[in-house]
Length: 562
Figure (tube, rainbow, N blue to C red):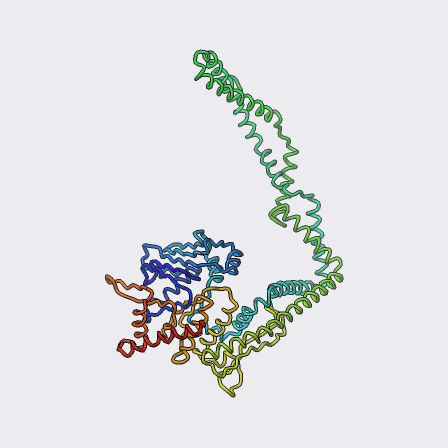
């Protein structure tokens, strides 16, 4: 779960550190107080795109850090698959954003922002303010079904995707294989020439570098010989280094007996130098003596290098790449030479690939059909808890006439909210407020099967009030018994059910507007609920109403826990 969120120099926030708790965490405050800024800050810590204008003081970096506890074995394993180790049951995601650059870290180690996003998907699920609108897209319905059915599906969707790619590749190869005899003869003739050219070269792996090195030595042999002869004269000729070191050794040796303690070491060093310079001169002389320039060998080497470079320019950047190209051309030529047999084998491969794809697609379709019944029953129950008293919620799964990487199912949610009303596609019937509650019901059902510990709902109360608002608050509280729930809300019914209630406020200090957040104590909660109930005028009656609302909320939570 999310333990702590630290925000510095971001929009209206100078520096805030929020300690969150288990259960239901509710953030309230006046419109424009900065609640959305906090959610945006968390989004940055999770790898979201950073806009430079969010930096409060351009002279300083903005900083966001989110500390998560991670003791759930499923979460720990998912993180390990992303190469993220958990230390002391914690994972720390941080983001620093400057005017010219930004950085991201996980547990203090720099990572690319996309990795933050992948890790964030394991740790937290954010239900944004307008996410319920995604229910107007049929594609979202299938995504939600597959997410619910992930255990039943296992690796079948991965296998489905793999078989689909295999079928597409084989089908494309068959389509491209159709050619008339003249084109086939022309291509075969061209391939034979290329194959002959590569084969005749008798290539060896790494030969290009060997030949290039040898050519460079031969081309520069005159320079090498001149430099080495000069070096030999300096080290081994008359009055050269070897003679001078020998003379120096003789002089030191002649007086060594008078101060052995100091001079024996010097004499030993000179003796080593004399030995080294003699060894160097012998090796240098031997190298010079064996050097000779053979004009015919040079031309042969130059010609071989030109051939190798020509082949590399045509077929690959290395000898190995050229040899791989040769193998592919030989395979292609073999197909063209037995073209009818090749086409027949290819048709059989396409048919076999299609049969495998059809089989796995039908398996996935059956699993989806079974799981859709379970999902819609569970969502229907959750909707009744959210004041959809006579709801019918189903899923229509229709077979498509073509394959896709996700199978052959075209599915959508269907709903009827009133008695006697025909069931119709969800996207054609539900209002904004209904969509919000439907998404909450679906999220609640999915959360039962999900290992994600933290769920965030941004203004889930959009378009609802009264009894419905109360039922939404109870559903969130129920969800919070198994998950950490963070909710940004304007409704007192939801705020009253909070296990931890935070107030976001905006104030002006020294001519600068700042947002702050703090957890409310019991007395302050009454005042905030009274504000939410009564608006600008808070009377004794409104405060009494707020106190009663909190008392009733405590009773409801206590009864649910029995």
